[in-house]
Image (cartoon, rainbow, N blue to C red; front, side):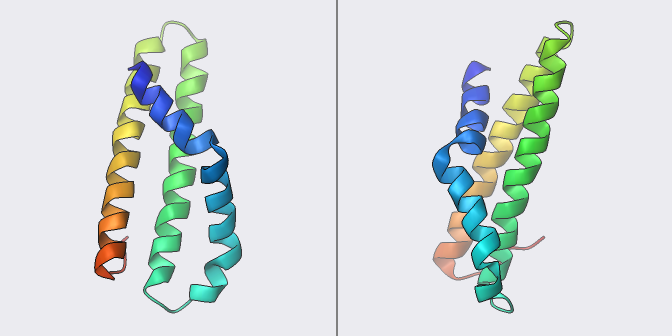
Length: 100
């Protein structure tokens, strides 16, 4: 469980991840209308949804009673982020756009 929180934390709060999401916003116009636009959107959505659920887990951990729920949320987010990263890399390698 702590490993899941570490994965989510490293993904969301690491300098490379924050720089990547900023670059996605800045450079998104350059790829508008290409298959790469879907990858930029995929990465941005992954970051913000993971951030949302990590914050929800953080709020729940403060209640003490919901600590197990918080850890379950962080574990689910970690698995979801790993899935989205792998799927994104596979599609990028194959030159395929991301589906919604």
